[in-house]
Structures are given as structure tokens and as C-alpha cells.
Amino acid sequence: MTFSIPRLLARALVSLQRHLLKACLSTLNSLALLRQQVHDMQLLREQVAHLSTEISSAKKVMLRLEVQQLKEAMPETMHKDYAQTADWALKSSGATIDIRRTSKSYEGVAHGLCRALWLLYCAANPPDTILQPHTIDPCASDDVLLLASLTPSPFTAVALCFQPDVSPGQCWPFQGSQGQVVIWLPARIQPTAITVQHIYKAVSPSGTVSSAPRDFTVSGVDEEGEEETLLGTFTYDVGKEALQTFPLKEELSRAFQYIKLFVQSNWGNPEYTCIYRVQVHGKVASQTSSQEPRDSLRPLLNKN
View (cartoon, rainbow, N blue to C red):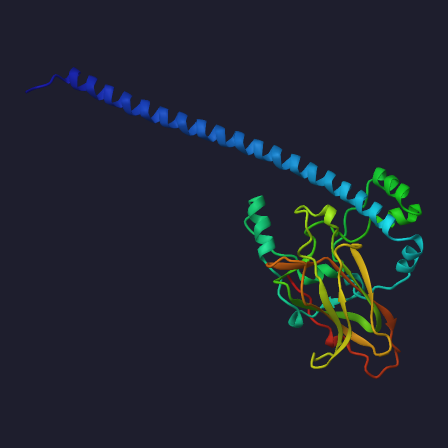
């Protein structure tokens, strides 16, 4: 059987047209898919922007609520006494965490948040979170006016705008219901009290504060950690103020540069315990003491 050249060319042209048509359809499908993906990305950006606005508004509401609750729960004399109590467990003053003698951070909290926000990587807050390493942004002018109406003076309102960030999640988590942290103070201190802070149940996104510490002990520790002096056994009550101060044994009249907080239990969370702030109050020991430690003894900071 023989075919004429025109007939062969016609068949080749038809086959080429079919291939071109398939290629065009495939390209159109790819463009439609790409256009849909771009649309979905735009919607996602809008949702993220909306969520960011809602979070910002929620933080302002939580700030108003916390200020109001603090005002109702603490009389003015307690505000004055607290303002005059020195806190030696401040990162800005030189306090650090003895990582070697401190429980490891619980990464499960960070991983859950990463999955929720579609992030590839993020780490749990390090132990020095409890030493006030983060502060919230200064309040806007209308927020300062609002705080001024809720607090004794405008100076108190401005100070509140620069308080540590204790919004939900800004805490140090460790695994389980038992753990410890050892704080290196910038000077040898005769400790008189310790303050522990969590968040109010009313501002918790989950509606619970089961990760708050419950029973705990406070001890003074020597440099090598071989000797500990028990300074008190306490219970953090989630039904009371978020910021709770516990007096230590003062009859010992001993000075320490390491303070250990050992959490024995929490309020029911089986996975982790979260501590927002720890403050150490007391008096500086005599500068002429022969036991004054050298700078070389200062523990390394957590680099996380």
C-alpha cells in the first residue's frame, strides 16, 4: 500500500496539532493551579494579618485585666513595699542560670506551637526566661492613659508599660511535674524572700493553669553544689495572685550566691511545668567577706 506525500503531511499535521492541543491544555491547567495557589496564599496572608491584629487586641485586653486584678488584689501599701524590695535575680543586673544544675527545657511546647503556625523550626524558651530577659513594647499613649486611670499614679502606669512579658506562653517549660533551676546571683545575698509568678487563669488561652508550679522548695547552694541549705518549703496557690512572695528562713543569716528552686509538683499537667518569673529578694552580704566569689566562677549563659 502506498500513500501520497500530501496525505502523509496531513496526518503529521493532525498529530502535531493534537500534541500542541494537549500541551496547551496542560499549560492552562498548570496556570489555573498556580492561580489558585496564589489566591490561597493571599487568603492565608490576610488570615495571618487578621490573627495578628486579634492577638494584639487580646494582649491589650489581658493587660487591662491584669492591671485591674492587681489593683483590686493588692493594696497601695503592698505596691510601695514591693517597689522597694530589690530583686537580685535579674538578667539585666547580671544574674544567670547554672545550666549544669538546671533541668532541661521541654521542647514539646515549642513543637506544638510550630505545627500550629506552620513553622519549620522554633525552640522552647530557655531557662533564663525566668530572669526577665524580655520586655513588652512600650505602651501607646492611649494605653498609658488607660493604665493611669487604673493605677495610683502616672509613674506607675509608665512603669507597667516596661514590665516583663508574662503573656501566655512567655515562660520556661521543663518536662513533667518535677524539675529545678539554679540561679547565679550577681552578688552574695542573705535571702529574705522569693517571688514566683505564673499567669491568671482568666488570661490563659486554655482556660486552665495546670502547668503552674504547686509545691516547691528553695535552698541556698554552694559553688560546687555538694551542700544545700533549705530555706523554705512552699505552695504556689493558683487561686491567689499571679505574683506570690514567700518569706525565707532569716534566722540562718547566711549569704549565698546560688539559689535553687526545686518544683515538687504542679497543678495537674502531666507533660510539663511552666515558670514565668522568679525573683530573689534579700540583702547584700559584707563586701569584706573572704568567701566573696570571683568572676571566673560565674556560670555560662544558656546560648539557646
